[in-house]
Image (cartoon, rainbow, N blue to C red; front, side, top):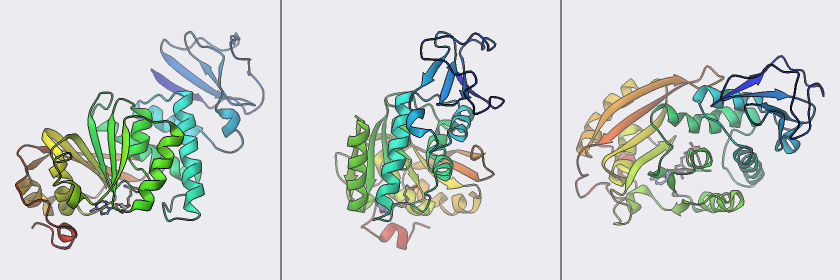
Length: 302
Ligand code: SAH
């Protein structure tokens, strides 16, 4: 099902209908297509079976947040977002901004920047793999919850463990998870080097993801030990990735992985170039890796 934002629709009360009433003036949309029109009080859905339904969360967002960019970006990624899910994004954003006043969580604070660089960027993972399934995912160095929380909001079947070495960030995330009433997601305080040697975490995940944490050699040592054979580690990187990938080749191979895909793309609605490096776990990670805390980043495997 696709979402279309109708740009020709003015921001007046024109076309607004009460929930449940149908809008007889618009052309019937194509099968399975949702058209969102900005109106005086929010967005109006035109879609088979739900024509005229008003998306209620916009009462809260109205005048405060522009949602067009978000919807367009989601559409480009082929993602649909329910009213509840959009509400969760708004709540997450508000909690992030509030906490950021007293704690260093993010330098990206404007709504539209957060939409692009946090929410849509996190969700872009859908370009690499099908996320609509039950799969155990570890987000290493999640910080304020990226990419893990947006992924969990949109793909509720994923079972997520969010890890960070800074406890105050984990405490913030725990508050967010409770507020958003998300299940099947936990936040764990610890360093990759310490957690990955524990039985309950070692080679127990179908997928490990990480964004903006370390260079690829160190990251491979943090992440590959968590991944079970046949699973993947996917690193979020900026577009220029070749050199970093070449330097990490040895580390990836020593740790039991092999690069299976490099997916380059432009962040929806921007000219920001991004890349995913997908590393498949082929063999068990040898004992002794990851090395003790601090070593992987100070002395990456070369
Ligand atoms: N992934 C988030 C945060 C990036 S900042 C985002 O993209 O916005 C990097 C985060 O990684 C920090 O919160 C830091 O505490 C955490 N981190 C760095 N090294 C780590 C390690 N070895 N184990 C666990 N977390 C680590």
